[in-house]
Image (tube, rainbow, N blue to C red; front, side, top):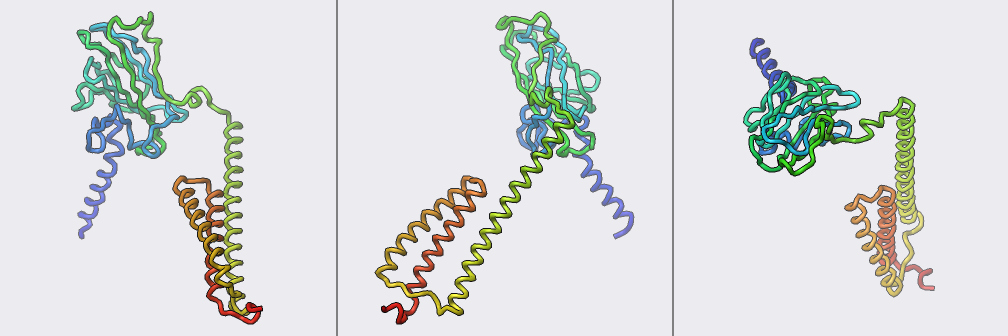
Length: 317
């Protein structure tokens, strides 16, 4: 492979990898994942942690009238509030009912039927929206917002969420004297108004560490104890067979009811163990049920080996 071809191949791969990361800075695509899901309704799932909306982001839109007037223009302000990310993007759609005016920093989304998005990462966009020229009934809006960390990658440092709202038809709601004062938002109240001091954050961090140490300590302790108990039983079996002459004989008249009792107990505990695993019961309860199940199974085993053991003179007395 020639050096020129190698350089060309590496450059091509770099461009292909960089395209998804930087392409959305000029506005997200209309259709997501090659299907029929659209960004204003489903959000920017390629960003953030786990592809889920974040409560750490406050997405708000102000200037929304309770009811629109035919042909009236309303200035809608879209804002993103996050503790560390100050800029990002958005996409808004009124399902083609009115007309969004493209202003500086925004653009119309291709093939969307009138949706609007950012053209460059920013914040606090003021978007004129012209109501329809006739009464078309209630108008529904879908809005998606994404506050980015500036890394240029759609990673866990980005935070997005969605917001849906409705503007009523003309004459169906009492209008506000100043529509610009009305704000609709979504997000966690504590993320917006409950900013914590460094001391509070450190105290919560220490409490989290202490809880983690306690949980891990309990897990290691009880798991180790269970292993030691099982090892002791296996060791006892080994020494009994090697040096004690094997298990004592058990008459069938005694073994049969004992085996039935222990078998029923084993079956019940096995069912309980399956239920504990299926319902994701806390590990402590699951471990206890598992140990009791093994104990019951061991009891059935002991009954069987004692019945099969050879009779000795002491067993006949």
